[in-house]
Length: 207
Image (cartoon, rainbow, N blue to C red):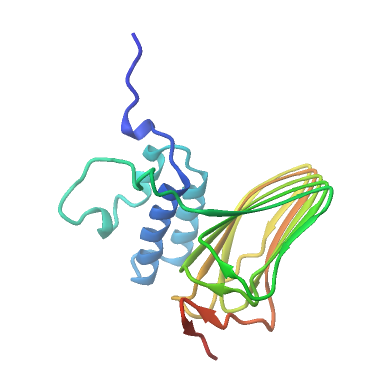
């Protein structure tokens, strides 16, 4: 007899992971998590495959305790998924740079080609940005302003996946998270010195 699938066994969506990331971000800003704890849990968030793997990551945080215990359930309405921008380079190149509006999620795929994502002059409309990079015999390069926090982790298989973690001085600064895989290729993400984010959610960031 076929065993019914429990809610904990349901596959997690990108929107589910983003919702958990938002809870962790708030916990960091409130001092409930240290930067190291936040970074460690965030790695688990983007490695999670099911809802059951996500729920324990926020079980001890107030956002999940309000109103008492609640049953595990999908964290986002499947009818309103996070819209992702896709950059694809196959035997060629693709780039996003200059002044452009950054969405919550960007997917980059390079196969015998290269993708460049330059956020140094971009306009941020979200507190947290996720870039998922896949490089197969190709390369993906990500650059962020020096007043934005950069985190992430990925897998290199006969290739390199390097995220040069950087913590912005302002704890409320936007966070860019880079995840993905490099197979016979390379993914590199780092802060660009001398470049600072100027526009974020319709307000100026000076200093």
